Structures are given as structure tokens and as C-alpha cells.
Amino acid sequence: MSDQASDDVMQGVTVVDHPLVQHKLSIMRNQETSTGSFRRLLREISLLLCYEVTRDLELTTKSIHTPMEAMDAPVLKGKKLVFASILRAGNGLLEGMLDLVPSARVAHVGLYRDPVTLEAVEYYYKAPTDLSDRLVIAVDPMLATANSATAAIEKLQESGAKNIRFLCLLAAPEGIASFRERLPDVPIYTAAIDSHLNEKGYILPGLGDAGDRMYGTK
Ligand code: PRP
Ligand code: URA
Image (cartoon, rainbow, N blue to C red; front, side, top):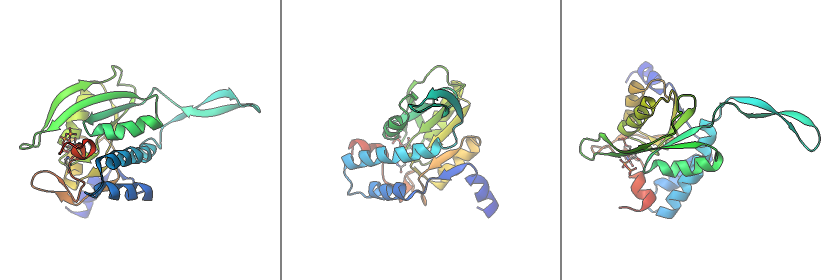
């Protein structure tokens, strides 16, 4: 890929390179890390990622009285956020994000990746009815081929979502390129961009299968 083409693909991609995120991610990658620690670390990282993905939210002011005097205090503008968890592994990010934004509405998109075709297969969908005037943040730890993330986001768009961001932990360059081509207007936030995908569509060096590592299913 030329430098210009690579710059174009990286438009709209934010890498959250905070040292705490990077440190925790390295522990998660280690195959010696237990299921319990993996889940706890994902929850902790999701707080930090949530902070970044919401950094530019619009504010308005509200008149309040402190114990000392009246003031116009900054508060979030607009309707409550929607977090859309791409099951199963998305729930690992969702939990921490809800710790930070407890009033958020939640959508669940159940998808699994067919191990042969690597296409996303939908098995569940439930979302708030009024997506069109809310910011929707879709979450899944892994962006590999991007088939799952793009299928989930296209489904949210069919349901009316217009303002969408995608948050993950690890992304493959191939997944970013495919995502950018299919959803050029959806910003991506990730903690790291890894080297490449292997022949089975797994991210290298990666962290393995995020769902299995979270839930101890392998
Ligand atoms: C994993 C991961 C993503 C998807 C990424 O889910 O959580 O959803 O793979 O791969 P892709 O970018 O190539 O689509 P998986 O299908 O293993 O389901 P799970 O979360 O239920 O384990
Ligand atoms: N899904 C995962 O959980 N891990 C990968 O490396 C690729 C897809």
C-alpha cells in the first residue's frame, strides 16, 4: 500500500495509546493470564477507552445551586448514549462502559463468525427503538476481517442509527481497510493495530479468541 493509500485508510482511526491501556493489554495478550484476570482487565481497559471515545461529546449548561452560590454547570447535551454490544465478547467492553455511563441505553447484536467462510451469522438483535437521534457506540474487542463489526453496524443503520462510532481493543490492518471501505463515515477507536491476520482469520500477535478467553470456553 502506498503512503497516501495508507493515510486514507487510517483517516478516522484513533489509537488509544495511553500507557495504562498498553500495559493492561499486554497482560491480556499473555496466554498465562487467567480467565478471571482477562475479564477484569478488559473491564478496566473499557473505562479508559470509553473516556476517549466520548472525549468530544457536546456539552450544554444547567442552572444549579452549589452550597455556595448559583452557577451554570456543564452537563452532557442531547439524548442518552446507546452502547451496542456485539455478542459475546462485546459484553466485556460493555460492562466497564456502563460503569462510566450508567444511564446509557444498550443494544445487543448477536453474531458469530462462521469458522470456514469467516462471514458473520446473526442470531439475536434487540435495540432501543429511537436510535436515529442518539450517538451509538458499537463495541467488540476484536476487529479481524471486520465482517462482524460491519454486519452489526449495518444492522444498526437499518434500524435508524445515523451517528455511530466503533470501539475495539485490537484491530488488524486488513479489518481496518475493509471497514473503511464499507463504512467510511464510522470512526474507529482501538487500543492497538496488530501485524496481520493468519490463514484462519485470527489476529497476529493478537490475544487469541476473545470470547473463549473471557468465558473459559476453550
Ligand atoms: C469474535 C470477536 C468478533 C469477531 C471478529 O467473535 O468477538 O465479534 O470474532 O472477527 P471478524 O472481524 O473477522 O468478524 P466470535 O465470532 O468468535 O464470537 P464470540 O464473541 O461469541 O466468541
Ligand atoms: N476473533 C477473535 O476473538 N480473535 C481473533 O484474533 C479474530 C477474531
